[in-house]
Image (cartoon, rainbow, N blue to C red; front, side, top):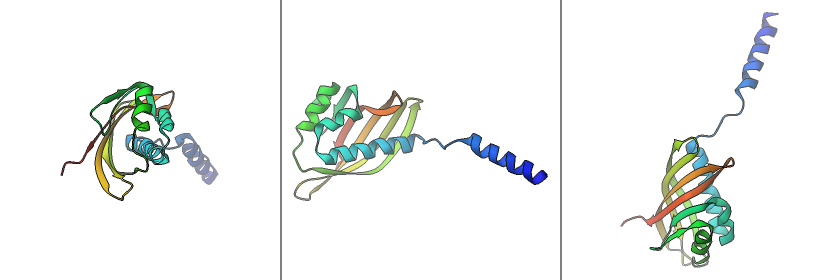
Length: 142
């Protein structure tokens, strides 16, 4: 009898725990992995799903790109054939619906040249999905 009660208590405890929730590092890593996949696809329009409608983007040019049209414009002007590989990153939750992620990425040019970059994303949760609201990239200083 005591064994049955113990089994029922254990089962109740396990079912009530539910699935483990991802933390800020895992959520940010997921967004960065999606970003890498979209970047490597070469399809500028796919970036629209990763950014907020009012996003701000400082990429590899001096110009600040804003909004959905700015994001599309920036990514459509990149030279074809460049690939990227995300590297180490750090992430923190600045609130329940805000993540800050800073880390590294290598951009691989068509000729094989690797250009190391620093990438910072500010992400916000919109309708349950993490989107990039602010993006800044800059080459790693020599």
